[in-house]
Length: 118
Image (cartoon, rainbow, N blue to C red; front, side, top):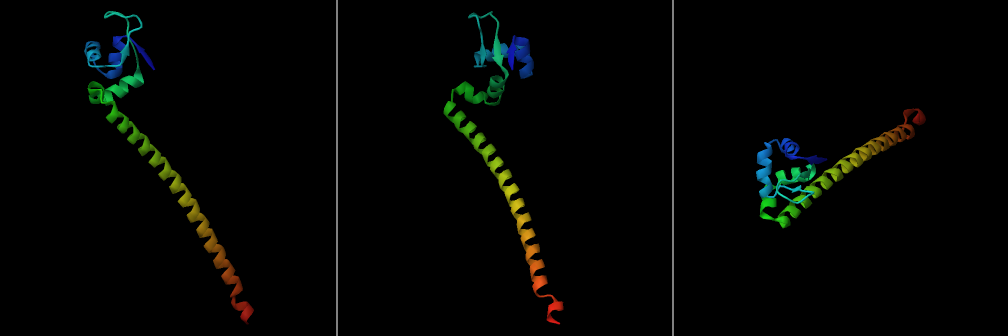
């Protein structure tokens, strides 16, 4: 979502507009369509959230570490999706195995029933 003006940006960051203006000097990702200190500002809420979450990295320009962190988050999400798929497959397999055992029991009961021996 695109935010326009310091009030909206400050509201999104849960701080005063003046604090958001001060954070601009620290690297807050805002854009000014018309260059100048007193011109309008716009910002993308997702970039603001990322900046707020990873402020230390933005300030230090440590994009290498930031890349590793994002890669780790991506891998963690991928592992969680894989685990969910695996659990679903294991549950389906358990159901199939239980059905096969029941079918095998029925077959053994039919072949070894006492009526045929008598």
